[in-house]
Picture 1 (tube, rainbow, N blue to C red):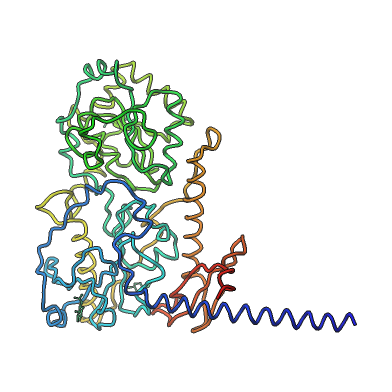
Picture 2 (cartoon, helix red, strand yellow):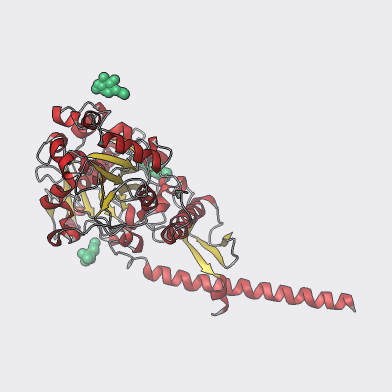
Length: 508
Ligand SMILES: *[C@@H]1O[C@H](CO)[C@@H](O)[C@H](O)[C@H]1NC(C)=O
Ligand SMILES: *[C@@H]1O[C@H](CO)[C@@H](O)[C@H](O)[C@H]1NC(C)=O
Ligand SMILES: *[C@@H]1O[C@H](CO)[C@@H](O)[C@H](O)[C@H]1NC(C)=O
């Protein structure tokens, strides 16, 4: 009797399992159908993540295009130029013959060139790079190149070893990149040494009667660096004037209240009156340095900096900024700032490099001198032009080597090209609601991206099979991956790595 029931139970279980498997397969087929349909439509310049980045992009150099935009691209593309296919709508250019020194390449965003025999390189833009839509199968002669200059918070997937190593060439904010963009927010040395905005210390001391020693202006609140938690704590020890959306305690003059006026002369004049500016990046990654750091230096205000852990390598001189990382607690930082505020000689020591026009940091000087692109400079290439040409030249170098019967030079990016640790939160006061939102968003988002990155390369699925990659802790979602024809190196197993809600499978 008992045995019969057991038999029935077993049959029932088998039946349920078979049904579940069938449903999953069905769902996967449906998802794959959606994916195929989406593949070529997925071309918004910015995805959801990118839109969250509310910081001004005023410094993005406008496109300077020396090349010819072609209507009869097909003829020309077939004329012997390697094709560089942008797997992103970033440039918006359907076809352009770009001249890079002695070499020329055809640059396009037109995905019909995917299977063209002369397509040699795929150019990706970090912010819209998506694992769900890659130009697969990757052929042996398909070089992949990554351009990623925006905030690291815009696409976490790229930081993980399985993803960054997909690329042969990179242009990122890291000094280790093939085309380092570390100084992309700095026009040159002249703006640093310029005294145009400098307010003399005597006036600053006088202005202290109505102004706080520190100023904070931020409109992108609660980013992964958790800067607002730090500043909120700091504010309990020292006065901070905050004009932006985040922690605002002071209104801007109405004529400056528009976010577009952040980079106007009038706004600079307001900031220049302060002794210290809180220059906190939205993400903490080596070499990720934005205008938040350079602006105070331009204005003759001392930056109190939090962001790139190796920022000391980029200071104009060894006494030009106060590094938050040197203090164990906001309390200590506050008392240091208060001491400088009360001691003109000690404060002035941080401005001395500017007064003397002395930039002693050779690394910074070399980086500015050797970069092949300009910032807000019509006479120079933009960093996108420089990236395109870097790839074009490397592709041509290998074409020439092969023509001579020599092996091509191998290029591969590694994790140092984008090194961003998992976001962490500051642990001072009890959990504020905003900090909870950070906990709930950035950390899981980073962990999720790590799983997806692993799923992309870490699992080898037999061709055409269905892999259930990961069961999440909650048991409500699973990763489903469909294997595709393998890429040239045999390492990419999936075209589709998706989270599927288990319950949705039953609602088919
Ligand atoms: C893309 O290129 C193909 C041929 O290579 C052409 O027929 C098509 O019109 C192009 N698309 C656009 C939007 O220019
Ligand atoms: C800072 O640099 C100056 C010369 O530029 C040097 O004399 C001084 O010792 C340095 N100070 C520190 C603390 O490194
Ligand atoms: C580009 O990377 C792929 C995958 O790692 C590799 O197979 C290919 O040889 C690389 N190409 C060059 C030019 O290094």
